Image 1 (tube, rainbow over the protein chains, first blue to last red):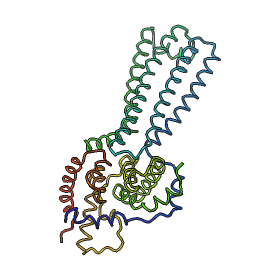
Image 2 (cartoon, rainbow over the protein chains, first blue to last red):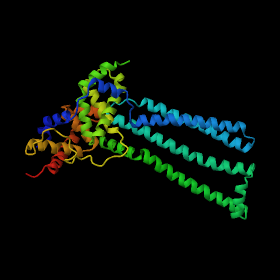
Image 3 (cartoon, rainbow over the protein chains, first blue to last red):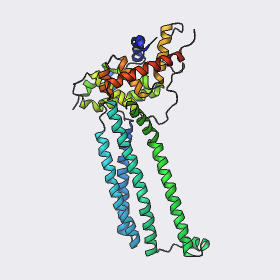
Length: 209
Length: 166
């Protein structure tokens, strides 16, 4: 039996295999929360924007109260960076706002969702990676310009290192390892969050040509 | 501001469309419920943009298919294929009814198709012509025709797999 012959019967099966919903059931559904990826992304962007603003305020507070010039500079730069990142998040949020049109053709809808997710993943990754060198360079410059003596750290350094170059090598290796770990961790995390889903959507786009 | 009452009434009259999409795209009952809820919500959100240029059923198909295709499940359960245990219960089942068996086999074969092919089959089953299917999918009518031919071949082969030997 071919598809054409079964059309009517199959249609009946597909449409009747359910329990009908009443008006009240549908009205109740309208009050529930959506679980679409775009809605999740929106929620996540709102939370991240709030966190960014809170962190910026906290860092600004440190800038104001700290008596160390190096700490003020360090946290001041990160306040500006966080502020900038908040704008990136807001820009992405605005893009998700425009993407609530699920009545467009399937291909156009897929293209819009994929483009947004790719941009989100790209910006997230770029920001995380960009913050690392800033963090390292500032730590090195500022700690050498205005060293603060912490007894526990000094004790540790004296125990393991006999020369300054050894400390510098240790710090260099530590930063490289941390950067590599963070690079792969961020990639893995973003892939885990959106990678497989993006691949699935792209496969659908490829099918549509 | 769209009227909620009017929307609910329209959706109620056309809810078989959503059920069809849910049945085709989801195996587990809980997943179907989730998808039904998501399609209803997405339709409500998009309803303000419905200007009545197309029939409500056509518009709802578009929203439902877009939602089903981009629907994200955290843990993707492997079987998109219906085993006999997962097949929807059609009520009274006469195992000796060859038509019933063929319908079940075809249903299972459609379950094997990709998300895009399922959408095309669904619209084809609704008697939409290739131009309309093309408009909804965002591809040309020729492309739909080519795909439909391939799908028919796939289904013919795949249906055999699900038929129990007499």
